[in-house]
Length: 484
Ligand SMILES: [Zn+2]
Ligand SMILES: [Zn+2]
Image (cartoon, rainbow, N blue to C red; front, side):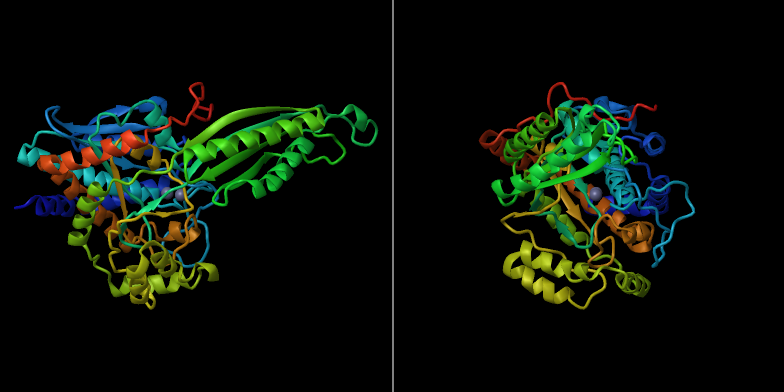
């Protein structure tokens, strides 16, 4: 039996356990750096299936890894996530927006229950492959917390967690079937804490110094700055604390989160420095103080074509998904709830990402409820407006990532519709298929030295051309809540 067939049989054998694992994480739904129960559950499963587990790695309490194998061969890593989003609680399998029976307001609106589950599936299949074939080498499953708003992997990269790997593989749940050809935007986020002096706003306003004014002026300054940055720069902010709810008090404190994104980290840094100047200027104008606390960052990603080729070949071999009439009927219903702007977004993305070929693919999926075509592997990359901390891993080790149609066509990201679809049969089938594609790719990298050598050579040349700029300040600490 060849390695692809072996991997498929291991995945098939564990099917029900793997779906249950993903569903369990869906039900826990913990947010950034709070994923204690999810991490404990994953560690228990890794131990149960024979992995050696290390907890709280990279200085993050909810990061962990499970390893299996020997030190005399390649090391293949799988990146798993399990963090949820706040405010996205939603009943599973429902086509109307309604809360679930579980406790708490968070929900898996980015599908990281499946992301962790798919990476776990691949890791387990490769572990069984190593065991059966006695191939030298190691498989490592990395539990990576706080992808959403915490960039857990960037902190893990700073602590050299992934240095042991020869290559890493991962996926993200989505609506299409492809090796992800896009490059993410690099991004930095910081918290600005403004401090002023409170006073009665009517009786003695001259005695007060408004932190809220400083924050508002910062925001105004950023709007003016927008005209003078490269057109692909994005700047966002969110108000954490406006000072208070009394209008007759000069607000003595205010704080907000500020984020800058650009195609490259060096451009992010340039604009970020200017945003800091705006905040300092606003503080000066209002005679308040501003404290700048680094919160998180993630880099754009480096694509390694020779690794993508291996994964793409396995993706083509593993597809299609077994899409049933029930899957299509449910997709049709839930698509009726999508905002008008979301409709045809997948077809438009095909045209944008895959050139002439993309236009043909767009036509093929126009009348479909679920995307069933596999995108080609194109020799060019396109820019996406999103960011991911997988980017930082890809600067220090070769990484490839895929997506498989987990949800109905055009499902918007970070939505209740994603939470609703997170335990459906289609989602399970996509997750298991990911296990086959990434597991089989891992088996090839482990047993075909020439393939791995080619990947490493391409990576080393890319690194020599453009080395990693370690983006996290040396004195920065991960924003882990202190209530534990
Ligand atoms: Zn997300
Ligand atoms: Zn995500």
